[in-house]
Image 1 (cartoon, rainbow, N blue to C red):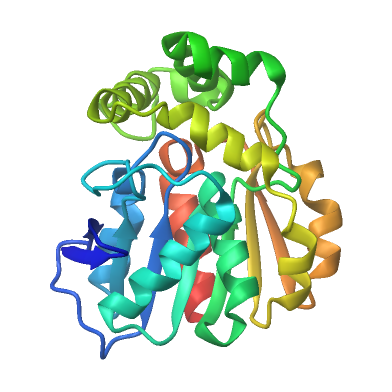
Image 2 (image 1 turned 180 degrees about the vertical axis):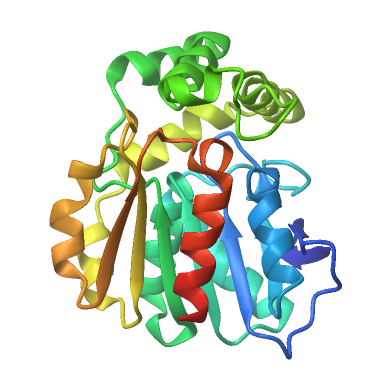
Length: 268
């Protein structure tokens, strides 16, 4: 599904069903150097079980046009503009990593428009090391390699991968390489800078008016569960679920558990 947002064409995957504004809407927001495809299992299930699905490609990512946006705040404004363009008044927001910050900021800016908020693989503040920032700016392939290793626990590297015949690390690496090749701008670096600079999380959390789920990976080295403690205390209705045998790439390593957690939260 293509929508004009802020003067540029934006792509949203709708889960294999035509988007219907009369159904409750669930919006999925990907993380740094990713696109909508990280949500394939979850989005298809939601779309075939009574929901209208919009899994976005952020500007400069995947099939969406325009320059990559330089801040979480700008991405949140873009997301709210996308809801307007799609004719959606209220929605569930589900975001992974950088996408969780975008979802949080959007929910803080427009609490009346968000019915439920799920933050997957989240942390606040979402600090990025100087070494990783420098690699993303000057040697992007090295940054991709580092993040790919750090985002996955050993569970995904065994022959018993949760997706039979699917090489989890290789698939994620190719996705990040494809995003890099699609745009002349330093997308990875800009995404990391946006995460590192975001400082409005506490204010946004206090403004959130809906139930919130934090879905985390026990072995997450990028956004460890302990990094959510302070933020969770600022949200009046917040539950925290930690998945075992799981790193930062929760949707790839524990796809069924992520789906079960998200769907149960949304319908419950």
